[in-house]
Image (tube, rainbow, N blue to C red; front, side):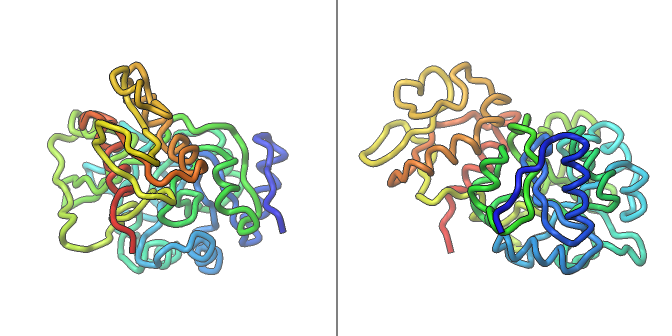
Length: 317
């Protein structure tokens, strides 16, 4: 059955929430990207996420919750986590924390780990949808696993039409890259995935962050697979020219002469982050031989942008 577009109003949310309560999958907007929502207390619904996305079962899911009280009912927050939550929730920050004893959230959602990745989304409609659904929502990006993350309802349907009940259409996402993921070694915060909350912002709040060793092979949070966020064609990074058969993804005024799409002519990293996945979708649709990407500064949101691009360019299995 063809997936439905639910309107972003009270009636649309009620209809979408009925599907969630029935164990169906519904994509919903957040400030970062569109999430693929399922009742995180329902093992079969969570399993359906992995089936719809073709997602490896060792890759954990983010659990979306409507309030800090709800978060505390499922995970244990240390003092540093409480401080980060006070500063950045609701918002584009995910915290990986120990599960409460007898936590009812699906073990599949956390890939069997004794931790959960949780966040309170900074999007009013997402919060309303959580309240209407009456349950925690497992919500990875609403796209086939490893492909470009969706920032519009149309992107969702391009990849998942007929596999989900529908998508709540509330237009383009504001941030455009996924949430930052932070875990902990004791009280020490550790950056697991850069994202919509920058490292500078986090360190201004809690001091220096530890960094996960990508070489240990462990998948302890969402978004840590090497090949991820990938279009259908190869990606060439830090390109200074445009070769035959390539489409060029540029940044800034100097790269505009080469660019088929420019993430930000003004060199604005916030604008670039918001445009990134939509631009990759557009270039992928053109069936080009390869996408060349011009250099993007490795500062602020540029860290998250470059992280996504390196994963898009990584060797495919």
